[in-house]
Length: 226
Ligand SMILES: Nc1ncnc2c1ncn2[C@@H]1O[C@H](COP(=O)(O)OP(=O)(O)OP(=O)(O)O)[C@@H](O)[C@H]1O
Ligand SMILES: [Mg+2]
Image: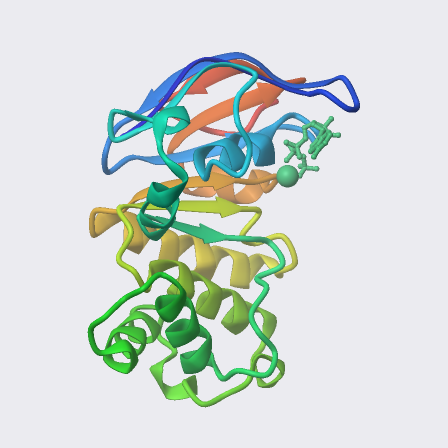
């Protein structure tokens, strides 16, 4: 599903070696944590998967396809197949929960019944009853669930999350993680970059540890230790 072959990423302007010879494979249907101190390279790894940035050396591939070989015209399709959840969910404040989802769908060129598809995604995160609420009328945890629904609205086979529980209290963080686990059980490959020791220890899954841009540990049993 996802493959990094000896990937190095150097940010040229600042001479920062954000990733060094990182090599791994993630199979379809896996749930993987990426952990590491601030600056270890977690967000860089996710940005490479979205082809927001290009590797300095090595190959990044999704579904056997080398992302460097994708034409620009193929990028919208790639991004439709990858859902992304950020720490600061970036919902549009002037749109309701439902409208945030239909807006995202429209942006990907989805042609079917947008409202129905959006409502299904809101139902998936248990928030269909809040479809008319604006982001400011939702709790932070609810906002994050809407952001997850928005990432899932195109039914992507791959979901990337960058600190999805960063601003949330422990109980709400756990709810978000259970939701991601449900999504994974239904077949979506899920990759979660996180600092949260609690979560990684509580729901044990494959854990990759980055240190100074190097992949120093990759354990199926998981557990947090840097
Ligand atoms: N656009 C950029 N230009 C130059 N350097 C960058 C850029 N983005 C990140 N870096 C540097 O690359 C390194 C890795 O950053 P990255 O954002 O991937 O870390 P991270 O593990 O996500 O950290 P955090 O936990 O703080 O989010 C850091 O040293 C950072 O300063
Ligand atoms: Mg980051």
